[in-house]
Length: 499
Image (cartoon, rainbow, N blue to C red; front, side):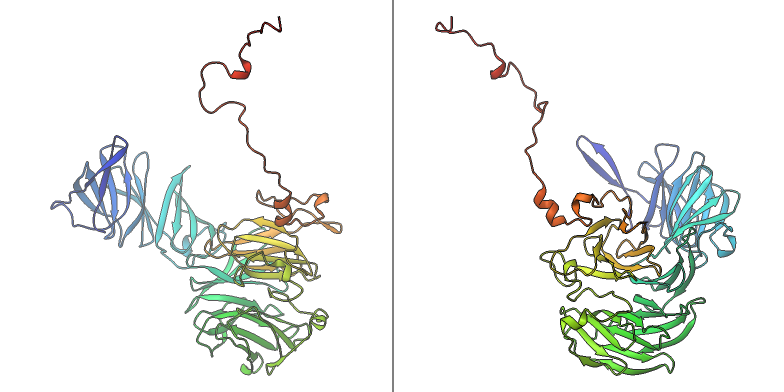
Protein backbone atom coordinates (compact mmCIF):
# COMPACT_ATOMS: atom_id res chain seq x y z
CA UNK A 1 0.00 0.00 0.00
CA UNK A 2 1.79 3.10 -1.21
CA UNK A 3 0.75 5.67 1.38
CA UNK A 4 1.46 7.00 4.86
CA UNK A 5 -1.37 8.03 7.16
CA UNK A 6 -1.03 10.43 10.10
CA UNK A 7 -3.51 10.06 12.97
CA UNK A 8 -4.46 12.81 15.44
CA UNK A 9 -6.41 12.37 18.65
CA UNK A 10 -9.74 14.17 18.46
CA UNK A 11 -12.00 13.77 21.46
CA UNK A 12 -12.61 10.09 21.99
CA UNK A 13 -11.36 9.07 18.56
CA UNK A 14 -8.90 9.86 15.80
CA UNK A 15 -8.79 11.95 12.66
CA UNK A 16 -6.53 10.91 9.80
CA UNK A 17 -4.60 12.69 7.08
CA UNK A 18 -2.59 11.10 4.30
CA UNK A 19 0.99 12.18 3.75
CA UNK A 20 1.63 14.54 0.86
CA UNK A 21 4.52 13.32 -1.31
CA UNK A 22 4.45 16.21 -3.77
CA UNK A 23 7.39 16.24 -6.18
CA UNK A 24 9.96 15.52 -3.45
CA UNK A 25 9.69 11.74 -3.60
CA UNK A 26 7.90 8.90 -5.34
CA UNK A 27 4.80 7.27 -3.93
CA UNK A 28 6.23 4.16 -2.19
CA UNK A 29 5.24 1.49 0.32
CA UNK A 30 6.54 2.32 3.81
CA UNK A 31 8.03 -0.55 5.84
CA UNK A 32 8.80 1.22 9.15
CA UNK A 33 8.35 4.59 10.84
CA UNK A 34 9.83 6.48 13.80
CA UNK A 35 9.77 9.87 15.50
CA UNK A 36 13.00 11.76 16.08
CA UNK A 37 14.07 14.31 18.71
CA UNK A 38 12.05 17.06 17.01
CA UNK A 39 8.38 16.39 17.68
CA UNK A 40 6.94 17.51 14.35
CA UNK A 41 9.41 15.43 12.28
CA UNK A 42 8.61 11.86 11.25
CA UNK A 43 11.01 9.42 9.54
CA UNK A 44 9.83 6.44 7.48
CA UNK A 45 11.68 3.64 5.69
CA UNK A 46 10.54 2.79 2.17
CA UNK A 47 10.56 -0.41 0.14
CA UNK A 48 13.08 1.23 -2.21
CA UNK A 49 15.71 1.61 0.54
CA UNK A 50 15.11 5.36 0.99
CA UNK A 51 14.40 7.22 4.21
CA UNK A 52 11.50 9.69 3.88
CA UNK A 53 11.59 12.72 6.21
CA UNK A 54 8.22 14.34 6.99
CA UNK A 55 7.14 17.55 8.70
CA UNK A 56 3.53 17.40 9.78
CA UNK A 57 2.08 15.59 6.73
CA UNK A 58 4.40 17.09 4.11
CA UNK A 59 7.41 15.22 2.70
CA UNK A 60 10.58 17.32 3.11
CA UNK A 61 13.24 15.10 1.52
CA UNK A 62 14.43 11.55 0.87
CA UNK A 63 17.79 9.93 1.66
CA UNK A 64 19.19 6.71 0.14
CA UNK A 65 19.95 4.38 3.07
CA UNK A 66 19.90 0.72 1.94
CA UNK A 67 19.88 -1.52 -1.11
CA UNK A 68 16.39 -2.91 -0.85
CA UNK A 69 13.62 -2.28 1.70
CA UNK A 70 14.31 -0.58 5.04
CA UNK A 71 12.59 -3.00 7.41
CA UNK A 72 13.68 -1.58 10.78
CA UNK A 73 14.44 1.80 12.31
CA UNK A 74 15.16 2.86 15.89
CA UNK A 75 15.55 6.44 17.18
CA UNK A 76 18.54 7.25 19.40
CA UNK A 77 19.33 10.31 21.52
CA UNK A 78 21.50 11.76 18.79
CA UNK A 79 20.46 9.91 15.67
CA UNK A 80 19.04 6.70 14.27
CA UNK A 81 19.98 3.09 13.62
CA UNK A 82 18.46 1.33 10.59
CA UNK A 83 18.44 -2.18 9.16
CA UNK A 84 17.52 -3.39 5.69
CA UNK A 85 17.07 -6.37 3.43
CA UNK A 86 20.72 -5.94 2.39
CA UNK A 87 21.86 -7.21 5.81
CA UNK A 88 23.46 -3.88 6.72
CA UNK A 89 23.03 -2.04 10.04
CA UNK A 90 23.66 1.70 9.71
CA UNK A 91 24.13 4.46 12.30
CA UNK A 92 22.96 7.96 11.29
CA UNK A 93 22.93 11.49 12.66
CA UNK A 94 19.64 13.07 13.77
CA UNK A 95 18.61 14.28 10.27
CA UNK A 96 20.04 11.45 8.13
CA UNK A 97 22.56 13.87 6.67
CA UNK A 98 25.54 11.66 7.53
CA UNK A 99 25.99 7.90 7.86
CA UNK A 100 28.27 7.51 10.87
CA UNK A 101 29.00 3.78 10.65
CA UNK A 102 27.80 0.58 9.00
CA UNK A 103 27.96 -3.05 10.11
CA UNK A 104 27.62 -5.99 7.70
CA UNK A 105 26.12 -9.14 9.25
CA UNK A 106 28.57 -11.84 8.15
CA UNK A 107 29.82 -15.18 9.47
CA UNK A 108 33.39 -13.89 9.55
CA UNK A 109 32.40 -11.02 11.86
CA UNK A 110 30.98 -13.27 14.61
CA UNK A 111 32.82 -13.36 17.93
CA UNK A 112 34.03 -16.59 19.53
CA UNK A 113 31.34 -16.35 22.22
CA UNK A 114 28.54 -16.66 19.65
CA UNK A 115 26.02 -19.44 20.34
CA UNK A 116 25.50 -20.89 16.91
CA UNK A 117 25.99 -20.25 13.22
CA UNK A 118 24.57 -17.78 10.74
CA UNK A 119 22.40 -19.46 8.13
CA UNK A 120 23.80 -17.08 5.51
CA UNK A 121 25.78 -13.85 5.16
CA UNK A 122 23.89 -10.56 5.00
CA UNK A 123 20.51 -11.88 6.23
CA UNK A 124 17.56 -9.54 5.89
CA UNK A 125 17.16 -7.46 9.06
CA UNK A 126 13.61 -7.32 10.41
CA UNK A 127 13.96 -5.75 13.88
CA UNK A 128 16.44 -3.45 15.54
CA UNK A 129 16.93 -1.80 18.94
CA UNK A 130 19.67 -0.20 21.02
CA UNK A 131 20.60 -0.28 24.69
CA UNK A 132 23.66 0.02 26.94
CA UNK A 133 25.97 0.70 24.04
CA UNK A 134 24.91 -2.35 22.05
CA UNK A 135 22.67 -2.79 19.02
CA UNK A 136 20.25 -5.73 19.05
CA UNK A 137 19.33 -7.08 15.63
CA UNK A 138 16.68 -9.62 14.62
CA UNK A 139 17.01 -11.29 11.21
CA UNK A 140 14.60 -13.00 8.82
CA UNK A 141 16.35 -16.30 9.54
CA UNK A 142 15.32 -16.35 13.20
CA UNK A 143 18.61 -15.02 14.60
CA UNK A 144 19.14 -12.37 17.28
CA UNK A 145 22.57 -10.72 17.33
CA UNK A 146 24.22 -8.20 19.61
CA UNK A 147 26.53 -5.70 17.92
CA UNK A 148 29.07 -3.75 19.93
CA UNK A 149 29.55 -0.24 18.60
CA UNK A 150 33.27 -0.98 18.27
CA UNK A 151 32.51 -3.78 15.82
CA UNK A 152 32.32 -7.34 17.28
CA UNK A 153 29.06 -9.24 16.75
CA UNK A 154 27.69 -11.96 19.00
CA UNK A 155 24.97 -14.38 17.97
CA UNK A 156 22.80 -14.69 21.09
CA UNK A 157 20.02 -17.04 20.05
CA UNK A 158 18.50 -18.56 16.93
CA UNK A 159 15.79 -20.94 15.81
CA UNK A 160 13.55 -21.98 12.97
CA UNK A 161 12.02 -19.06 11.12
CA UNK A 162 8.95 -19.98 9.11
CA UNK A 163 5.97 -22.33 9.06
CA UNK A 164 5.82 -25.02 11.75
CA UNK A 165 8.36 -27.33 13.39
CA UNK A 166 7.36 -31.02 13.55
CA UNK A 167 10.55 -33.00 12.99
CA UNK A 168 12.51 -33.88 16.15
CA UNK A 169 15.09 -36.61 16.82
CA UNK A 170 17.32 -37.26 19.83
CA UNK A 171 20.85 -38.60 19.25
CA UNK A 172 21.18 -42.20 20.51
CA UNK A 173 24.50 -41.59 22.30
CA UNK A 174 25.14 -37.86 22.79
CA UNK A 175 23.33 -34.81 24.26
CA UNK A 176 22.44 -33.69 20.74
CA UNK A 177 19.19 -33.46 18.79
CA UNK A 178 18.04 -32.63 15.27
CA UNK A 179 15.04 -30.62 14.10
CA UNK A 180 13.50 -30.11 10.67
CA UNK A 181 10.86 -27.58 9.74
CA UNK A 182 8.65 -26.08 7.06
CA UNK A 183 11.34 -23.39 6.69
CA UNK A 184 13.39 -25.87 4.58
CA UNK A 185 16.23 -26.20 7.08
CA UNK A 186 17.68 -29.16 8.98
CA UNK A 187 19.41 -28.15 12.22
CA UNK A 188 21.61 -29.98 14.72
CA UNK A 189 21.57 -28.70 18.32
CA UNK A 190 23.85 -29.17 21.31
CA UNK A 191 21.85 -29.76 24.50
CA UNK A 192 24.57 -29.25 27.11
CA UNK A 193 25.25 -25.93 28.82
CA UNK A 194 25.85 -24.08 25.53
CA UNK A 195 22.42 -24.83 23.97
CA UNK A 196 23.72 -23.84 20.57
CA UNK A 197 23.27 -24.86 16.96
CA UNK A 198 26.11 -27.09 15.75
CA UNK A 199 25.16 -27.42 12.08
CA UNK A 200 22.51 -26.31 9.63
CA UNK A 201 21.56 -27.47 6.17
CA UNK A 202 19.18 -25.92 3.63
CA UNK A 203 16.75 -28.38 2.03
CA UNK A 204 14.88 -28.32 -1.29
CA UNK A 205 11.56 -28.70 0.56
CA UNK A 206 10.25 -28.37 4.09
CA UNK A 207 10.32 -31.45 6.33
CA UNK A 208 8.13 -32.98 9.03
CA UNK A 209 10.20 -35.85 10.47
CA UNK A 210 13.77 -37.01 11.10
CA UNK A 211 15.57 -39.87 12.87
CA UNK A 212 19.15 -40.82 13.80
CA UNK A 213 20.61 -44.22 12.97
CA UNK A 214 21.37 -46.46 15.99
CA UNK A 215 25.08 -45.50 15.90
CA UNK A 216 24.27 -41.80 15.48
CA UNK A 217 26.33 -41.47 12.31
CA UNK A 218 23.44 -41.04 9.87
CA UNK A 219 20.33 -38.90 9.96
CA UNK A 220 17.21 -39.60 7.88
CA UNK A 221 14.93 -36.68 6.96
CA UNK A 222 11.42 -36.94 5.50
CA UNK A 223 10.28 -34.07 3.27
CA UNK A 224 6.89 -32.60 2.43
CA UNK A 225 7.01 -33.57 -1.26
CA UNK A 226 7.14 -37.33 -0.60
CA UNK A 227 10.93 -37.66 -0.82
CA UNK A 228 13.46 -38.37 1.91
CA UNK A 229 17.21 -38.25 2.28
CA UNK A 230 19.86 -39.68 4.56
CA UNK A 231 22.69 -37.34 5.51
CA UNK A 232 25.93 -37.62 7.46
CA UNK A 233 25.02 -36.57 11.00
CA UNK A 234 28.29 -34.66 11.47
CA UNK A 235 28.59 -32.83 8.15
CA UNK A 236 24.85 -32.91 7.14
CA UNK A 237 25.99 -33.80 3.61
CA UNK A 238 23.91 -36.15 1.43
CA UNK A 239 24.52 -39.89 1.60
CA UNK A 240 21.47 -41.14 -0.32
CA UNK A 241 18.00 -39.90 -1.31
CA UNK A 242 14.75 -41.40 -2.66
CA UNK A 243 11.47 -40.08 -4.04
CA UNK A 244 8.84 -42.82 -4.24
CA UNK A 245 5.80 -41.00 -2.82
CA UNK A 246 3.76 -37.94 -3.76
CA UNK A 247 2.44 -36.95 -0.34
CA UNK A 248 4.26 -35.80 2.78
CA UNK A 249 6.60 -38.14 4.66
CA UNK A 250 5.09 -38.13 8.16
CA UNK A 251 7.41 -40.46 10.12
CA UNK A 252 10.74 -42.19 9.60
CA UNK A 253 12.60 -44.74 11.75
CA UNK A 254 15.75 -46.92 11.59
CA UNK A 255 15.54 -50.49 12.87
CA UNK A 256 17.49 -51.38 16.00
CA UNK A 257 21.17 -52.37 16.40
CA UNK A 258 22.79 -52.19 12.94
CA UNK A 259 20.02 -50.00 11.53
CA UNK A 260 19.82 -52.29 8.52
CA UNK A 261 16.28 -51.24 7.62
CA UNK A 262 14.67 -47.83 7.35
CA UNK A 263 10.88 -47.48 7.56
CA UNK A 264 9.39 -44.44 5.81
CA UNK A 265 5.73 -43.54 6.45
CA UNK A 266 3.77 -41.22 4.18
CA UNK A 267 0.40 -39.56 3.76
CA UNK A 268 -0.04 -41.84 0.74
CA UNK A 269 -1.24 -44.47 3.31
CA UNK A 270 1.90 -46.61 2.84
CA UNK A 271 5.03 -47.44 4.81
CA UNK A 272 8.06 -48.21 2.64
CA UNK A 273 10.91 -50.34 4.00
CA UNK A 274 14.43 -49.76 2.65
CA UNK A 275 17.60 -51.79 3.06
CA UNK A 276 20.14 -49.18 4.14
CA UNK A 277 23.12 -51.33 3.14
CA UNK A 278 21.97 -51.84 -0.46
CA UNK A 279 20.02 -48.55 -0.76
CA UNK A 280 17.01 -50.38 -2.18
CA UNK A 281 13.33 -50.52 -1.29
CA UNK A 282 12.62 -54.07 -0.17
CA UNK A 283 9.06 -53.89 1.13
CA UNK A 284 5.80 -51.93 1.18
CA UNK A 285 3.32 -52.03 4.07
CA UNK A 286 -0.20 -51.82 2.63
CA UNK A 287 -3.63 -51.91 4.23
CA UNK A 288 -3.99 -48.63 6.10
CA UNK A 289 -7.25 -46.87 5.24
CA UNK A 290 -5.89 -43.39 5.96
CA UNK A 291 -2.64 -41.45 6.14
CA UNK A 292 0.12 -42.80 8.39
CA UNK A 293 0.82 -40.78 11.55
CA UNK A 294 3.36 -42.78 13.61
CA UNK A 295 5.53 -45.89 13.32
CA UNK A 296 7.74 -47.92 15.72
CA UNK A 297 10.09 -50.90 15.35
CA UNK A 298 10.22 -53.79 17.78
CA UNK A 299 13.52 -54.56 19.53
CA UNK A 300 14.43 -57.29 16.99
CA UNK A 301 13.92 -55.07 13.94
CA UNK A 302 11.42 -57.53 12.46
CA UNK A 303 8.04 -55.99 13.29
CA UNK A 304 6.54 -52.55 12.68
CA UNK A 305 3.56 -51.04 14.45
CA UNK A 306 1.73 -48.36 12.50
CA UNK A 307 -0.85 -45.73 13.48
CA UNK A 308 -3.13 -44.14 10.91
CA UNK A 309 -5.48 -41.18 10.70
CA UNK A 310 -8.39 -43.63 10.84
CA UNK A 311 -7.45 -44.60 14.43
CA UNK A 312 -5.90 -47.87 13.27
CA UNK A 313 -3.11 -49.75 15.02
CA UNK A 314 -1.60 -52.07 12.41
CA UNK A 315 1.32 -54.52 12.44
CA UNK A 316 3.64 -55.47 9.58
CA UNK A 317 6.51 -57.92 9.32
CA UNK A 318 9.80 -56.59 7.98
CA UNK A 319 11.33 -56.50 5.48
CA UNK A 320 8.55 -57.49 3.03
CA UNK A 321 5.76 -55.60 4.75
CA UNK A 322 3.40 -58.54 5.31
CA UNK A 323 0.49 -57.56 7.53
CA UNK A 324 -0.16 -59.46 10.79
CA UNK A 325 -3.15 -59.54 13.12
CA UNK A 326 -1.95 -59.62 16.73
CA UNK A 327 -4.18 -60.12 19.77
CA UNK A 328 -4.21 -57.48 22.50
CA UNK A 329 -2.72 -59.88 25.05
CA UNK A 330 0.20 -60.56 22.70
CA UNK A 331 0.76 -56.88 21.88
CA UNK A 332 1.57 -56.12 25.51
CA UNK A 333 4.28 -58.82 25.52
CA UNK A 334 6.17 -57.35 22.55
CA UNK A 335 9.37 -55.46 23.41
CA UNK A 336 9.54 -52.27 21.35
CA UNK A 337 12.70 -50.42 20.42
CA UNK A 338 10.83 -47.12 20.75
CA UNK A 339 7.28 -46.17 21.59
CA UNK A 340 6.15 -43.01 19.81
CA UNK A 341 2.73 -44.22 18.70
CA UNK A 342 -0.41 -42.66 20.16
CA UNK A 343 -2.86 -45.53 19.60
CA UNK A 344 -3.14 -48.92 21.25
CA UNK A 345 -4.41 -50.55 24.46
CA UNK A 346 -1.32 -49.54 26.45
CA UNK A 347 -1.78 -45.82 25.76
CA UNK A 348 -5.53 -45.36 25.38
CA UNK A 349 -5.65 -43.22 28.53
CA UNK A 350 -3.68 -40.36 26.96
CA UNK A 351 -6.70 -39.12 24.98
CA UNK A 352 -8.81 -36.27 26.43
CA UNK A 353 -12.59 -36.53 26.46
CA UNK A 354 -14.41 -35.70 23.21
CA UNK A 355 -11.15 -35.57 21.22
CA UNK A 356 -10.44 -36.75 17.69
CA UNK A 357 -7.39 -38.58 16.39
CA UNK A 358 -5.51 -35.36 15.59
CA UNK A 359 -5.51 -33.89 19.12
CA UNK A 360 -2.51 -35.83 20.52
CA UNK A 361 0.35 -35.15 18.12
CA UNK A 362 3.21 -37.13 19.64
CA UNK A 363 4.30 -39.52 22.37
CA UNK A 364 7.62 -40.77 23.71
CA UNK A 365 8.35 -43.50 26.24
CA UNK A 366 11.39 -43.60 28.51
CA UNK A 367 13.91 -46.40 28.01
CA UNK A 368 12.84 -48.06 31.27
CA UNK A 369 9.23 -48.06 30.05
CA UNK A 370 7.76 -46.23 33.04
CA UNK A 371 6.99 -42.69 31.86
CA UNK A 372 5.12 -41.68 28.71
CA UNK A 373 5.29 -38.05 27.54
CA UNK A 374 2.77 -36.58 25.10
CA UNK A 375 2.27 -33.30 23.24
CA UNK A 376 -1.12 -32.07 22.07
CA UNK A 377 -2.98 -29.38 20.15
CA UNK A 378 -3.76 -27.46 23.36
CA UNK A 379 -0.09 -26.66 23.96
CA UNK A 380 0.23 -29.12 26.86
CA UNK A 381 3.15 -31.43 27.62
CA UNK A 382 1.78 -34.31 29.69
CA UNK A 383 3.42 -37.14 31.63
CA UNK A 384 1.65 -40.44 32.21
CA UNK A 385 2.64 -43.50 34.23
CA UNK A 386 3.04 -46.29 31.64
CA UNK A 387 1.16 -48.40 30.63
CA UNK A 388 -1.75 -45.98 30.29
CA UNK A 389 -4.72 -48.34 30.28
CA UNK A 390 -8.32 -47.23 30.54
CA UNK A 391 -9.78 -43.92 29.48
CA UNK A 392 -8.81 -40.49 30.86
CA UNK A 393 -5.81 -41.57 32.92
CA UNK A 394 -4.17 -39.35 35.52
CA UNK A 395 -1.29 -37.20 34.35
CA UNK A 396 1.08 -34.32 35.03
CA UNK A 397 0.61 -31.28 32.81
CA UNK A 398 3.15 -28.61 31.84
CA UNK A 399 2.77 -25.46 29.77
CA UNK A 400 5.61 -23.75 27.93
CA UNK A 401 4.73 -23.56 24.26
CA UNK A 402 2.48 -20.82 22.93
CA UNK A 403 1.13 -23.08 20.19
CA UNK A 404 0.38 -26.77 19.71
CA UNK A 405 3.10 -29.20 20.82
CA UNK A 406 3.95 -31.11 17.67
CA UNK A 407 6.61 -33.55 18.89
CA UNK A 408 8.25 -34.89 22.05
CA UNK A 409 11.35 -37.06 22.54
CA UNK A 410 13.30 -38.32 25.54
CA UNK A 411 17.08 -38.00 25.38
CA UNK A 412 19.05 -41.26 25.21
CA UNK A 413 19.50 -41.44 29.01
CA UNK A 414 15.97 -40.23 29.87
CA UNK A 415 17.41 -37.24 31.75
CA UNK A 416 15.88 -34.64 29.44
CA UNK A 417 12.60 -34.32 27.56
CA UNK A 418 12.70 -32.41 24.28
CA UNK A 419 9.58 -30.76 22.87
CA UNK A 420 8.91 -28.65 19.79
CA UNK A 421 6.05 -26.26 19.16
CA UNK A 422 4.35 -25.85 15.82
CA UNK A 423 3.64 -22.20 15.19
CA UNK A 424 5.99 -20.93 17.92
CA UNK A 425 8.89 -22.78 16.20
CA UNK A 426 10.49 -23.33 19.62
CA UNK A 427 12.62 -26.22 20.85
CA UNK A 428 12.26 -26.60 24.62
CA UNK A 429 14.41 -28.62 27.01
CA UNK A 430 12.75 -30.03 30.14
CA UNK A 431 15.02 -31.48 32.84
CA UNK A 432 13.96 -34.64 34.62
CA UNK A 433 15.11 -34.93 38.24
CA UNK A 434 15.21 -38.11 40.28
CA UNK A 435 14.49 -38.37 44.00
CA UNK A 436 14.87 -42.04 44.77
CA UNK A 437 12.02 -44.00 43.23
CA UNK A 438 9.50 -41.15 43.21
CA UNK A 439 9.71 -38.52 40.50
CA UNK A 440 10.25 -34.96 41.66
CA UNK A 441 8.61 -31.92 40.15
CA UNK A 442 10.06 -31.69 36.64
CA UNK A 443 9.83 -27.97 35.94
CA UNK A 444 8.73 -25.00 38.00
CA UNK A 445 6.02 -24.08 35.52
CA UNK A 446 3.33 -21.68 36.69
CA UNK A 447 0.78 -23.76 34.79
CA UNK A 448 2.00 -27.14 36.03
CA UNK A 449 -0.16 -29.40 38.14
CA UNK A 450 0.85 -29.99 41.73
CA UNK A 451 2.35 -33.30 42.81
CA UNK A 452 1.02 -33.53 46.36
CA UNK A 453 1.19 -36.91 48.05
CA UNK A 454 -2.55 -36.96 48.62
CA UNK A 455 -3.07 -36.70 44.86
CA UNK A 456 -1.50 -40.09 44.39
CA UNK A 457 1.37 -38.87 42.20
CA UNK A 458 -0.16 -37.95 38.86
CA UNK A 459 -3.06 -35.49 38.83
CA UNK A 460 -6.13 -35.63 36.68
CA UNK A 461 -7.77 -32.49 35.34
CA UNK A 462 -11.08 -34.32 35.43
CA UNK A 463 -10.74 -35.25 39.11
CA UNK A 464 -9.60 -31.76 40.06
CA UNK A 465 -12.50 -30.13 38.23
CA UNK A 466 -14.99 -32.29 40.11
CA UNK A 467 -13.39 -31.41 43.45
CA UNK A 468 -13.51 -27.64 42.95
CA UNK A 469 -16.07 -25.86 45.15
CA UNK A 470 -17.27 -22.83 43.23
CA UNK A 471 -18.45 -20.24 45.78
CA UNK A 472 -20.14 -16.93 45.10
CA UNK A 473 -17.75 -13.99 45.38
CA UNK A 474 -18.83 -11.51 48.07
CA UNK A 475 -17.30 -8.05 48.09
CA UNK A 476 -16.33 -6.73 51.53
CA UNK A 477 -16.30 -3.22 50.10
CA UNK A 478 -19.13 -2.35 47.77
CA UNK A 479 -18.07 -1.52 44.24
CA UNK A 480 -20.90 1.01 44.01
CA UNK A 481 -21.04 4.16 46.13
CA UNK A 482 -23.88 4.06 48.64
CA UNK A 483 -25.61 6.78 50.63
CA UNK A 484 -27.39 6.62 53.96
CA UNK A 485 -27.39 3.81 56.47
CA UNK A 486 -27.91 0.18 55.61
CA UNK A 487 -31.29 -1.12 56.89
CA UNK A 488 -29.82 -3.61 59.31
CA UNK A 489 -27.59 -0.92 60.81
CA UNK A 490 -30.33 1.67 61.37
CA UNK A 491 -31.37 2.40 64.99
CA UNK A 492 -34.72 0.78 65.60
CA UNK A 493 -37.31 2.67 67.63
CA UNK A 494 -38.31 0.73 70.78
CA UNK A 495 -41.97 -0.27 70.73
CA UNK A 496 -44.47 0.38 73.55
CA UNK A 497 -44.58 -3.32 74.45
CA UNK A 498 -40.76 -3.47 74.76
CA UNK A 499 -40.83 -0.47 77.09
